[in-house]
Image (cartoon, rainbow over all chains, first blue to last red):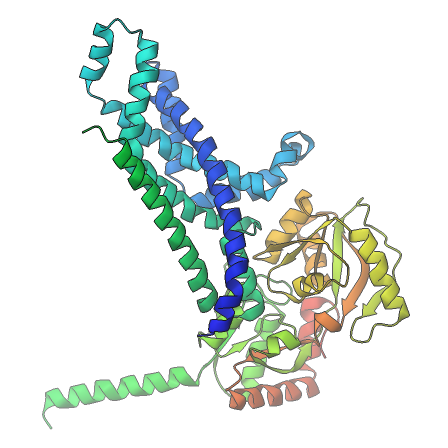
Length: 224
Length: 275
């Protein structure tokens, strides 16, 4: 064990962890909107919209995240026509390709989490709203959405942690996130064990923080 | 001794013998993704200059060899962790790597070059045909200055953990935006897509790609050798494995004298890259 290397690489890895957190937070925010939109489409009676939303979640949950990143980054980069359009401004950047892949992936899982949360809402809550003469739109925004979010907290916390670990795949498309910098340090020191132990420790700490935030929120918003 | 004991004994003995035979085989690690040095054919079989040379060297050593595939970025760690006993993967002999492993004498040399897509503003730089960085002369220093101003703010792509990455990180050509990839294939893809303004690798790696893909990839600037680019390509061997190092050095001597190295090099490179 080369402890000196572990200590020396720690600050470099720590600053790379901010890139990891940036990737995570941006893709989670976009993914949450996508997830909410598609959860609502899944509950829609219109068979076309319903199937479309189902197809999206099926596609992104049924293929590995790494494959999705490669298709978006290397695959779309091969289409010559695309390079002449304004889309290339975004797709040219590895950072945005990673964000698109992560957001679409987490969006698919989030839509499933929210859908099942909506479906577990007891009809009594909605009926109570109706009996008070509240419009169904207000019921949706003020009763269904808040309850669904609370119901989905444990599963969503899990999804955040999975996504946080998933961001390590950004290093495969040249992004210098925590894993990317770890690999870089290894490429000059040839000591994978030490560097990956430190990087793994930082990931573990981030999981610890996220886990506890979710636990706190669960407690705060419990209504049982 | 009853039958049962005899059976156990013979099984153990055969295991011992098989184990010994296995230990006698030299395991050589290669990447299989860096043509013409080493690559794979359509059926997934490892081919290339070093694959053929490896079997030739093993014949001179008088031991059997197996060739093991290993990703480039884990090559040296895998050698140290005894996944195989020697590296033949277009790995240049550099001072940095010699801190971790030993190298045999060089068996071939390559020059590095920048490549761009045809029509790039970086095409046709005013530099000498080749520069040596071990003791840079006035012309080489001037070429580095030309490159520094031409590459300022540009994205240059390289394979990770290579001499090409070391050179760009060394600051000899100023502060360029270096992007690193796991394989040379990925570097080529992003050079062709336009995500990289330029790429740096062995000149033969680009000409091989241009030929096979038909993409208008052209070399630009000087070819590089010496300095961060090391002193030729050698067999990488664990530091404590001095016995094997001696064997490889002797085998390379014989193969060179008999003209094997230049014959195999000419076959794969199209010119004599042996040294």
